[in-house]
Image (tube, rainbow, N blue to C red):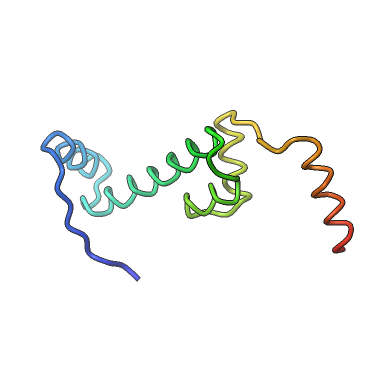
Length: 98
């Protein structure tokens, strides 16, 4: 479901969005949606990198799956915050369930 949103922005930002839309031959609204998606991803990456959120929460914030955020974090060279002991505990829990 989509919702309409009216946003105020300074002239420089508007000109930037307008120029991007023209370069990509798309409507301004589509360009803004793409920038919001990218912003969500960058926001999630920064929060994860700073240790504010878990990888699951980062995926949630970005609106993508955990495996996708893991791949993206790896592309950015961001190492997992999961320690070896946490890894072993998770592995043992998985063995109990399976």
